[in-house]
Amino acid sequence: MHYPYQLKSFEAYQAAYEKSVQDPETFWAEIAEHFLWKKKWDKVLEWNFKEPRVKWFQGGKLNITENCLDRHQAALGDQPALIWEPNDPEAGHRILTYGELLFKVMQFANVLRNNGVKKGDRVCIYMGMIPELAIAILACARIGAIHSVIFAGFSAQSIADRIQDAQASMVITSDGAYRGNKIIPLKAVVDDAMVGCPSVKNIIVYTHTRLPVSMIKGRDLWWEDEIRKVEKQGNPFLQAEEMDAEDLLFILYTSGSTGKPKGVVHTCAGYMVWANYSFVNVFQYQPGQVHFCTADAGWITGHSYIIYGPLSAGATTLMFEGIPTYPDAGRFWEIIQKFGVDILYTAPTAIRSLMGFGEGPVHGKKMDSLKVLGTVGEPINSEAWHWYDQHIGKHQCPIVDTWWQTETGGVMISNLAGVTPSKPTYATYPLPGVQPLLVDEHGREIEGNGVSGNLCIRFPWPGMLRTTYGDHERCRQAYFSTYADLYFTGDGCLRDEEGMYRITGRVDDVLNVSGHRIGTAEVENAINMHSGVVESAVVGYPHDIKGQGIYAFVIFNGFHENESLTRQDVLQTVTRVIGAIAKPDKIQFVAGLPKTRSGKIMRRILRKIAEGETTNLGDTSTLLDPGVVEAIMEGRIS
Image: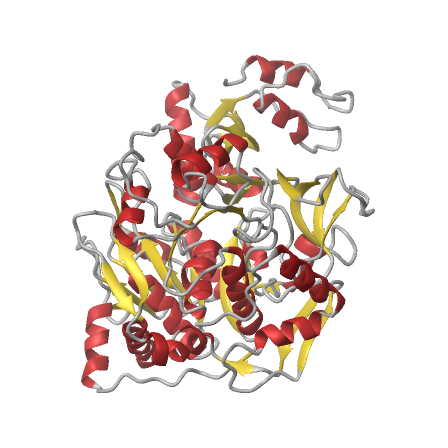
């Protein structure tokens, strides 16, 4: 596979960037020419950020799976498309070539068709990191069904919320999932979620862990039985559904600053072009290399850089079922040695966690195949960056520090590996097509270098979200209403003297815990569901491993004999409502919360207390009861 649009020098990057700003339509039309279209577009771009309305490659017809699979068959049919490494290192890995993956995707697409799934239907996928997850995603895309992948750590309540919002007609899951030394009973969690989800007609269950499961007649189907039916029908060849450029490809739910998750919508053509372009350029992918992204496909990183980006580029993508510390903290390094991994893309949380084990687990591992290292999900701190550079990259591998979001579809600001300058802890420069700017709280642009402000984007890029599913007004409110005619990222940012960007963290009520965005309102809602809780307020605080930890201040009015036990009860409630991922790290029981006379909780003060700041709390004169602050400070959990 040849990438004529891969930028090979800083000068080439600067020229491409300049063209993408001066003449974006010609720029993206030339990139899009390198893909497989059933019909070319009539109009490259139509947009305004007021409504908001964004349309790319209007009138174009295509199917993303033909671009990820079919078009590679002649040249790459026998090449590995997907390498799967299981949770248990003794269990034996699997390799699917491009030919095998296409065959399995068509097989399962036929299963979906046989069970009444058609173009435009929503399908929820709740699976561990196994090849069948990728197969299910691609099979949905092949027939034009809209997939919504739910991270396999979410609770039954979280699944039900997402199914109800999307009105999904089918759920695809497996009996269970392996995660370190745990087995997660996925099908049982789905069964709990089904109460109150009348839109679901069928659940397809793949056998993976052999956990006993309840199969309900008329609703639940075994994946293997359905595949056998397709085999009996003969040749599974299935023509890819013709999709409009702006047809929905997937919905991915993300936490917001209100309690209810919002379904971010990505469409077929623009997302494909962006995922591919950013993959090929940021990682400087070369044909034949093995790309190992350690993310879960339940998040956008897995969508864009395990599945759609690499496969559309004819790459070999590695999918790992387990966790970095099982059976020991050398697992990533063993996988790199075993498969000769060229590119490693992981989260700063994982790096910080592995740093804690020292150099022992790295010692003796042969990792000279590595060419590029990357980080994703949160800003990386200097110590972790240098450890990664020294012990994993041996000072030989550029580190791409990528900033982007579920809503952006792919990397927005990052150095291009070995091509553009890097700087520890900086995402550096925007990709071609991305026009960032910094604004103050009044929306006035902050010009020049050596400044900081709120990060916005002033012009559309192909991979951006189009709406929030079923609620376009929420999309407008969340992203386009804070500052007129700008996409607001919710992040604070610094631009240094050389014009390089460094993300400084969220400026809204969203936490970034281990690279996962969690809305404070969502956690508060879950805590408040505990029968003894009167009210709660949640803030973030610096955490050595996770980047940000969750600190909860809770007014408790129930039976409260044992504080430690009550704390466990509250944590159990959060796990039940959202999932273990949202559990607070610290819960402080308080008699009251700092509120203004109008009843607004002053989270600014709570944030400072959580961070250990006790002297400079700012103006507290507007508080209804300033004495509350003293009491909270005294009870602070260090």
